[in-house]
Structures are given as structure tokens and as C-alpha cells.
Length: 463
Image 1 (cartoon, rainbow, N blue to C red):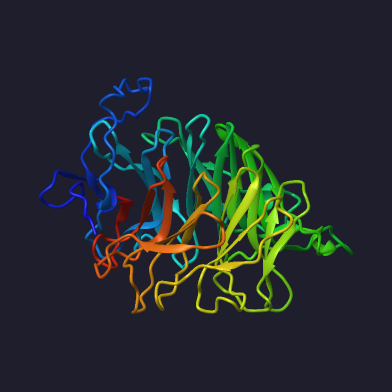
Image 2: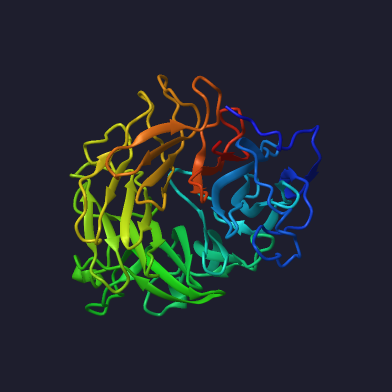
């Protein structure tokens, strides 16, 4: 296992910013490319990549009440350098603050973290994912979707979906914009505290997409003088390159006319959002059905939903989904207990048309170690996929730390780990990642390298 020499310790130059966050010193940001960056950087010298192995990008705060790195999310900038978003949670204030930190290829170090927003809603009950990040390959915009405490009508408050955008490779982010609509803001909805959960962002072609689950927001027609009946829904918001204004659509499966055919979201299960090669978004989400049955469903805006699989009446309290496209063909990863993976393992499914789906493939385990509740699914650009997942606590594992699986044919998966056999490594909660153009894995997660469990932001680059 490699531990990078570029991480902050008391013997390496560091700075202290809000809430006890520390990062490695850096100068102004420029980016690698064939043309000078907006900052005037020389692409011949602004090309220093991060070291391989583990790097402690943001260390623990050193304060018992301040937790650094919750809800880590990562993407690679248009020029291929990592940008990481994360929460700093102050348990005494009962709210969180959102930061982002990026790699500076001119200096060859992590830049100063930038504060994006505060007063945020924090849900640290896995598999909740309060933060997500994406990059528009066309214009290089970086977007972060997150949850924020939002007061609509006193004394009630709720969590709303917000978006913050960067147009300079993550050096700065604009003011967060509210995406979700709540209660009295929309006369067609009842109540005043519809909570938006687990917002996922995707950017493409100069457009901004955000999908999320929202309680009591998918409503049917009023009957008999009563208020409209409402249930949890699956929302897709579409905005411009600057975000707002957003148009909002709730996904339908057509099953229940009482709720106008809107699908009933499983609000405890994070969904997946992706854009295909033709610029059309898709959503994969878990839908509550009869009894204990949970359905995994593929949605397209304005199109009929298709069933991917269900749980065969097995109870699921902590399902989650990850999703990507290869061209226009969807690839899906789910942690849905369906009887074939009672051990908590991951299932992979694929389709060529979004209508007919493969049988689920259970990913191999590392000995008897389960794959816990956060994961990521990446396409490799060659028809295959890479899966990332946090590690578990059980004994008998071969690979320490976060796990990854590769498949070139979408059928057979080989397992590996971010660390040498027998070494000590962080578990990697709130797993996020990306692939370089060379196909190398880049991960970011909550942890303390090389210890097992502590707060902080860790980055791992595949040698």
C-alpha cells in the first residue's frame, strides 16, 4: 500500500480554515490543456498529477464535536484533475457546512478548500447521500447538488435540494440555488414541509439536471372536497447552464390512479441519475410496492417506466442504486436484497434498450466481508464497468480498505482493493470516484488514512 508524501501533517506546511479544516498550501489554480487556462497557466508546467496511493486531503478537525468529510463526492475536472466536495458537521450547531477542494496541477498540491454553503441538513444514516457532484464534458462546468435546511412557513422547516456551480474548474462556486418546490410555494401541493432527499446531479450539453426523492409531493386529484392525496415522489428538475430556473417533473409508473400514476418513492433509498450519449437523462430508483416488495425501476422523462427487478417480497430498509450509460444503454448497480444476496452484496444489471434487462449478477465478495451501504458505478468507455464500494468490518478479507470490481463483458467481475493484502486501510464510507482517460481508478471518501475509522477526506489514486 502506498501512502502519498503529499498530505498534511504537522511537519508539512498547512493552513487552518473554518471549523478546524486543514489542507495543503497552494497558489492560484490553473488547469492543464492545449491552451492557457483562464488564470494564464502554462500547460507545459501545469500538468503535475496527484501521487498514487492514499492521500489525506483534509485531515480530521481534532475536535470531538466537528466531523470532517461526511457525504464526500468527487469528480474529475474537464482537464482530468480531482475535485472533491464534503460536509463539515458541527454536532453542537446541528447543521453542516459544504466545502470543495481541488487538485492544483501547477503547484502539484491540493488547493485551499472553498466554503460553498452553510446551514445544511445532515443525514448521516447510511445509505443517505446528501451530496453529489458532476462535470459537463462540453463546457467543463462542475455542479454540486446538496440538501439544505429550508424554512417555508414557520415553525416548520424541511430539507430542500440545492445546486452550486463552478465555471473555473472548482476554484470558485456560485451561490447555491434552490431546486425543489415545497408546500405553499405550489398551490397544487398540500402541506408545507415536503422533504427532498439524496439529490443527484448530472450535467451535459449546457444543461443541469437534478433528481431526488421528495415526501408528500406526488399528488393526485382532489376528491369529495378533500385536499389532494399525496405520496413520496421521484422528481427530475431540468435547468440551464446557470441552473435556475428549473422545470420540474415527477416520474410516473402508471400503477396508482389515486396519485395520478406517480411512482411512490422509497425515500430511504438513494437513486441514480445519468445522461446518455444523445443528451437524454434517465433515473433508476427504488419504488415502494405492495407488502414488503420493493421494485427497481428505470425512468425516462415523458416515457413509460420499465421494471428492472424486484425484491421478491424481501424487506429492504437500506437499498441504494448507482447508474450510468454506455452510449444509450443503461448500466445499473443496486444494493437490493432479493433473496440471492441476503449477505448484503451488490447486484449488477444491464440493458441495450432500457426495456429488456439482464438477469442480476451478484458481485463476488472479499471472503466473508460484506459490501456496506455506499457504492459507485463507473463506465470504462470500452463497454465494461468498474464498481467501487466501501469495505466492511468482517474478518477473512484479502483486500483491505475500499473494494473495486472490474468487468469487461458485464458478466464476470474480478475484485480488487485499494491497498496491499494484510495492510491497514480506511473503510471508505461515502464512496465516490472516477476513471482517468487511461482507465485508472480515482476514489474519494470519508476516512483517515491509513487508520480504519476517523473523520477526514481521503483520496486514492490507482498506481
